[in-house]
Amino acid sequence: MKQQSFFHALNIRHDVCVGCSHCIKVCPTEALRVKEGRALLYPDRCISCGECYRVCPFHAIVVEDDDFNRIYDYKYRILLIPSVFFGQFNKQISKEEINGILLDLGFTDICPVEHTVKVLSEAIKQYIPQHERPVISSFCPAVIRLIQVIFPALAGNIMRLKQPLEITTHYLQQLYIQEKNAKLDEIGIFYITPCAAKIASNKAPVGENESPVTGVINMKNLYNRVCQAYKQKNKPSVEFNTLQVSAREMKWTLTGGEAENLAGFRCLTVDGVNNVIDILERLENDEITGIDYLELRMCDESCPGGILVQGNRFLTAARLRGLADTAPMENSATDRFNDYLMQNMPVGEIQPRAMVKYDRDMATALKKMEQARRLKKQLPNIDCGACGAPSCEALAEDIVRGLAEQNSCIFMQTQHQKEGTLSSESAIRIRESIWGKDRFTGKS
Amino acid sequence: MRLNFNIEGGDFTKAGSASSQVKKTLKQINVSPTIIKRVVVALYEAEVNIVAHAFRGNISVDIEPEQVHVQLTDEGPGIPDIDRAMQKGFSTASPKVREMGFGAGMGLSNIRDNVDTFKITSEVNKGTTLDMTVLISDNQ
Ligand SMILES: Nc1ncnc2c1ncn2[C@@H]1O[C@H](COP(=O)(O)OP(=O)(O)OP(=O)(O)O)[C@@H](O)[C@H]1O
Ligand code: SF4
Ligand SMILES: [Mg+2]
Image (cartoon, rainbow over all chains, first blue to last red; front, side, top):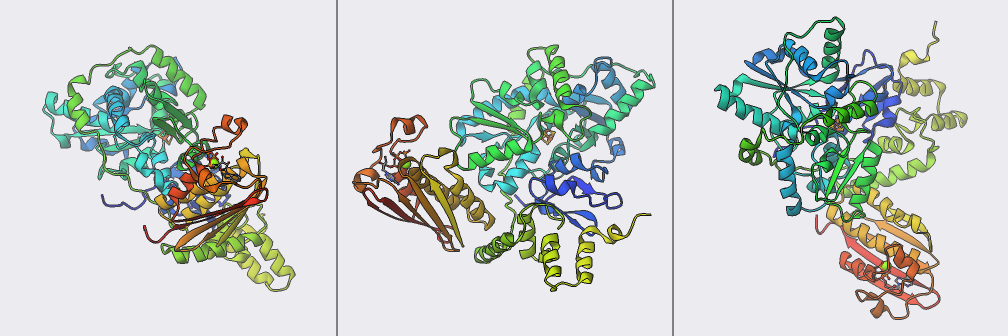
């Protein structure tokens, strides 16, 4: 498969960003720096996890979703709702009402994403015994990208099967073609996304050339639209009951949701970015034995903790569990398409994308790394961030790569000024190159 | 480039820190994952042997574009019969060590299987030295 350039679904609004440096500290791949008073993203390292989005106090980081009006390019406009969407609302507003309001926005049909979890669970149960264990779930696109960039040796463990989003899309296409005589290009299937990672996986899927899903809609936008309609007491023109999902299927997006569908296998479930990194670190060291399936989710509490999901993640998860309690035990609606869905489930090989830290040539890389190590010894090792890099180690790397200079470090700079080897003008120029010119003029 | 580590006998909580650090370094210069795995497995086993069987030790790791060379020296009881110690399944591990999941007697042979050169010398009541090399460029 052709390697795509790294699509990132998060962008920095340079007119809003003030270079506060909150984001550079939380990025798990150290993809962010402060330069000229603004956050700067190294796109090849971005895994669209959204940690920067969470901490930005100025809302300068935006999620690139699709233009809503694109839905009108299609005769059949189907909205795919992940169950977590309903977890955001309190009991006063029913699922049927929410569906009705969403239909009124211009969709012709609505379907739960998790409608095809059962057939996927069967496929996974067949997949695990035939592959190297532990098999790592392909559910969370941020985890897949994290593995590609930081744990390339584990790329082969990622399960090469699609997830409910893509499988349900295939199902709906087939259903519409068979039952409504629809043509494929008349069917637009749009997904409400809880995160940036799912957008990245829609625009630049891994292991596939193109995602079957037509487009992605920001969950925050639709949450607002539903709340608005509800508050203005605009009763939906219809109350709409979607296709079935079973209780177990409904919980797929929750932590442990996959494990619950894979009875008989030894599953380990881990959520939260630091926990996921720790477990992958251990897997790479061969420390994990006796596990068949690793369910890894980048967000704390999985998708209820997604950056576009409204409210408290624990409450969202609890409400979703409550909803699942009222769902049927079994969903057999998709059974007749099982063969077709099974055939369309595998994806191609998942390539590692190890980031080139120093150089492609190993001898050069080694030399540069040694240089960086020596430099790091001279730095104060307090990771203050005044240089615009997330840590002293990252600055040392940047210096060696020609992206920063020793005096970018405020301590080195002060030392050199004290020794008389750096003029005050040069010092100011360096500081301004990192934090911007406006930073060093008095506030009126 | 050289990395040095000190190892304390009996401190299992820190066993593996040298191999993690070496792994991190090799990843940063894009050594192939299969080679990294061999280095990490061999180094980890050797590190644990010092923790489990000796009093204290030192590890030095030399990373070059062609090879990774590791030398581990320890102060400890030494190994009276190296040929026997190398046999799969031979172990003098105490019940305490076995309780922690070590002591299957597989360490030394596992090390030998993962490296390209392997040399072990030992003096009873003094200590043990292990020299090993993993070639990088050949299998790239
Ligand atoms: N550094 C050392 N100092 C003293 N004795 C050692 C040292 N390394 C190994 N030995 C001896 O050699 C034996 C075999 O070592 P080996 O690593 O193969 O197995 P083990 O350490 O007993 O168990 P395992 O490595 O499978 O957990 C040990 O039981 C111990 O008696
Ligand atoms: S856990 Fe869910 S919401 Fe969070 S990044 Fe992964 S898929 Fe997106
Ligand atoms: Mg051993």
